[in-house]
Amino acid sequence: MENEDLVIHMQGVSVRRGKTTLVGDVDWGVELDERWVVLGPNGAGKTTLLRLAAAELHPTKGTLDLLGERVGKTDVFELRPRIGLCSAAIGARIPAEEKVLDLVVSAGYAVLGRWREEYDRLDTGRAERLLGQLGIGHLADRAYGTLSEGERKRTLIARALMTDPEVLLLDEPAAGLDLGGREDLVARLSELALDPDAPATVLVTHHVEEIPPGFTHALLLREGAIVAQGLLDDVLTEENLSKTFDQPLELQRSGDRYFARRKATQG
Ligand SMILES: Nc1ncnc2c1ncn2[C@@H]1O[C@H](COP(=O)(O)OP(=O)(O)OP(=O)(O)O)[C@@H](O)[C@H]1O
Image (cartoon, rainbow, N blue to C red; front, side, top):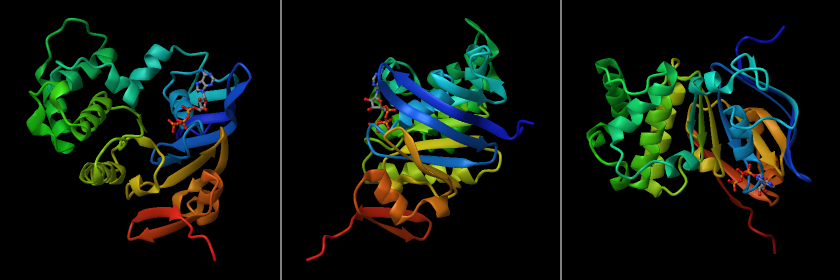
């Protein structure tokens, strides 16, 4: 019987475009209370994996179950509002003049199936609360186009959480942030990861430094194939990381954070 706690379940999943395999033969399961980091170099297939999990892509081969529904046999338009996705592609589609609060509130429309209804007080209150949780409550009335990159990322996360999704997918949320911005985002994501009421979460990144404390599992991806997956502490080793990035890497752990760099050459 299907494990009811599995929010994402891929069995033998491949995505091909022409002769290119974007991801090949992936078996992967994410449970309700898990927080996964997907790590790999450029072009490894991370975004492809996340788009499968967001019901934006169908597998060329294999079976994909999201929130207990088989993709290909279910209405993805009913599925998508149950999944919170935050990616640069979504950010790029937002008009610069859009007000931050409206942007977050309007994420709820897909779920409620409303078109021109007035924002009701509940929605506005929830959006304000989420913005506050992400430390940007004071920006509610600002236009999206006037925000810094870090503020935009946090706005998009608040928007992704607005529908109270059962799974939250974050594609490189720290990309383009300065050191302070990255550290602040890592801290916010850590709070979210440690909140037992938060949804199952998958975070895609290139950098071990961006893994927020509280994340439980890791999947390492290289050239569309899984190098290793499982509990973060078991999977995140120098050997696995070096294989994933195809170079000898040194991995350090300091407190609940990770740091990596290339090994110094001998001689
Ligand atoms: N439609 C397509 N046709 C052919 N190849 C594609 C197509 N879409 C993506 N690819 C290739 O598939 C590979 C995986 O892409 P994907 O965006 O999933 O990687 P990624 O790990 O997210 O990379 P990055 O870290 O650079 O964002 C890349 O080599 C990309 O060029």
